Length: 143
Image (cartoon, rainbow, N blue to C red; front, side, top):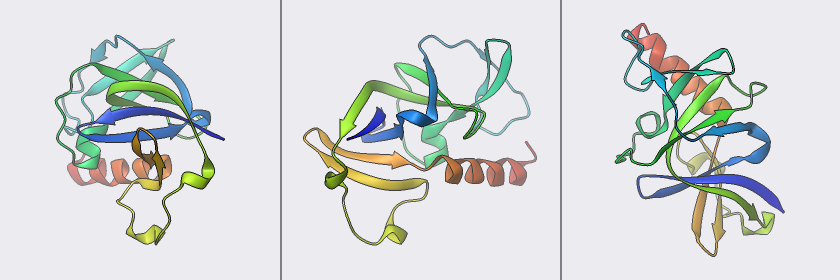
């Protein structure tokens, strides 16, 4: 079985492999970054380490009401960022056989796989692709 931390952004359900998650911050205090692009709403001081916060809805181009916001801190071995998400579900076990097949090249940007579960489809986020997209966005805006 595979394990993911699942959450919602708008009407879509997403997941991160549990091994890529350092922790979840329930009530984050964000420090505004005045020259940063909108995709970076601020920074989080986590145990003395300053971490950029990425508005995942904006990064993926999804409308979101941004209520019930949580920060999913990505394991620093993958990226030093916290992802702003809404409606956190928690840990979800998924049968690898439930992966939705097809041409991987047709998956949306920043999605590495999709799984069909009893509770609906989970879009698995591709952390390296997200970091690359974020880097290109901040380079383009000078942030």
